[in-house]
Length: 56
Image (cartoon, rainbow, N blue to C red; front, top):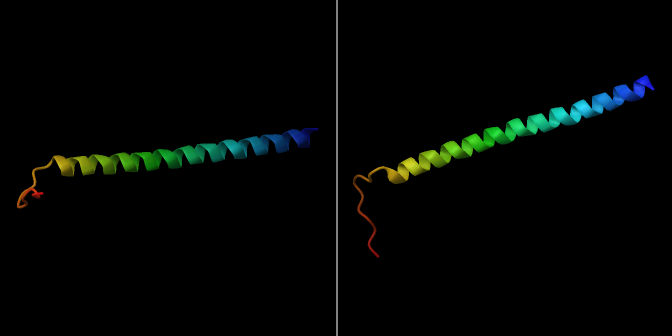
């Protein structure tokens, strides 16, 4: 009985460690994408020096 509970606890812990690790990974990726989007918006908002607007 005690060993069954130990295995249950180990399995439960392993699942939660995996969930936590995945959340840390996803949070890092979201932060990276947000930073890149911020940089791209800054490039679009910056005045374009030395370039002319394309004529269509």
